[in-house]
Length: 317
Image (cartoon, one colour):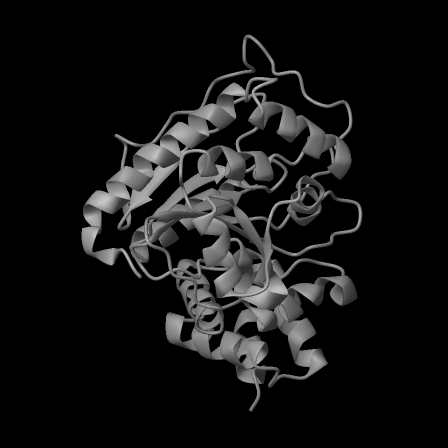
């Protein structure tokens, strides 16, 4: 098989490119993930989508293909899924702190991501330094949740073909549509988890709002901190909550204008060891959690309660 006819449509430049419908996007991504395309086709696809940008229908089709090839994870109660794919360069990566604060409230938390990224501090490194569980399969995830611990799983174990697509970045030199899909990936059955979906560029926020509405999603949409699904500890971004695709203004939280009156005392460096020590000091009660993170936790707890109310029959064994 070949995806050349799809490349012909999407590869006409930013102004001339034609978008694919959901079925076409699903077929294209299925071939890519199943290794049925040549390296040349893969590079052409990655570059064409990078220039054109994904539409809502294309994103839906791509995500359906990836989810079908994903390790299924079941949960007995509504869980939070934190896709962690950027890491930190300037600020401490506090995705693990968010996961631990939620776990303290008896919330099952699954974090997934790529374990290494040169020049960035990944969540995987911080999980390792804190001695938190790293899963190899669904059984490990269930065991960690039984102990009321957040758990991390590598993308190459959660969805191996997606990890291979993400690794194409190191050959091509640019991120591709796989990165967008990874930050939307939810391996839990419908109605049993709340994704934290983050974006960096405002245009993606607009596209993702429509995507979450059209796909009847349960999610918290926010502008991320250096691309991570955690509130900036210095200011609260807007938190938009979607339950069954409906934007719930009663659960959403407006952005905080400007910086906080009292800025949290953060580590001077953002390396994994220093970040892990800071997170441990917050979890132990030695230091307070940054206000924006505490507000994000409160927002997620209220949203999980709404999700449980909307899907009482979705609790799985």
